[in-house]
Image 1 (cartoon, rainbow, N blue to C red):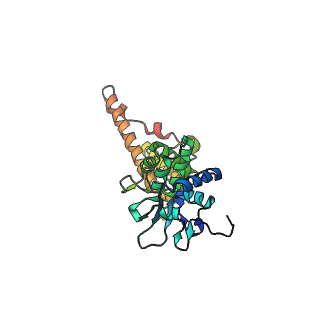
Image 2 (cartoon, rainbow, N blue to C red):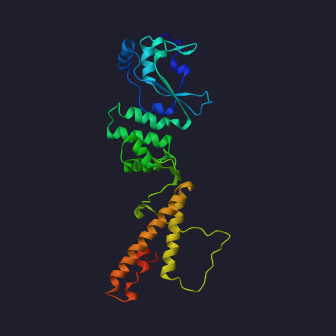
Image 3 (cartoon, rainbow, N blue to C red):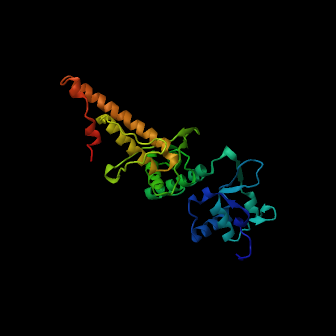
Length: 283
């Protein structure tokens, strides 16, 4: 093909979703082009635009078919768009707005055509998370056909590396906006808690009253939480607070169960836990 000749890519914009999967090799495209010459296009070309009044249409599915046709000499474009008889006879399907989710459609159309390894599926999960981070783990898992725990693991890994943005709300499988649940995993071996500076508006007041073990435990927990908050983006603080509240509820349930178990063997004073056991003594 002459380098100066326009190709379909010069006239038709490709939606980013279409690039989730690699193009065929040149030899594969040539074989596909020969088949199209003999039998015509068997699969329609899928186009999408934000709305019916928009002229900013994009190709969602059909890159390989169009490239294969041009490779074997079938002229795809003309003054009025698709030019060749075989190209014009192909069914071109148009979708607008919410009639079609380009990302979900591309994965659904291609996932059955190709045999992907688990590593390739994880890579596809990462690409979808980067493109549509607002979608829930279950929604992306259903699109690709993997477990939602796999999506969650990939999300956590790529967020930690800064490859995908942190989001506070997600869209569930029914299209509803939901607050994102954040699983907080903390290793005390890798965290150094530093004493926070007191705000100027609330100067530190010293009293002669000894600090109780419970108050000391609360102060250290508060310092830890604020140190943790400084280590993560501000948009994740809502999820951080939610996760901490869930952990505290779990701790309360465990302590209550232990209190009941010890109640038959010890009095109330012996059953009360020692806060120093949880917080550690003064360093």
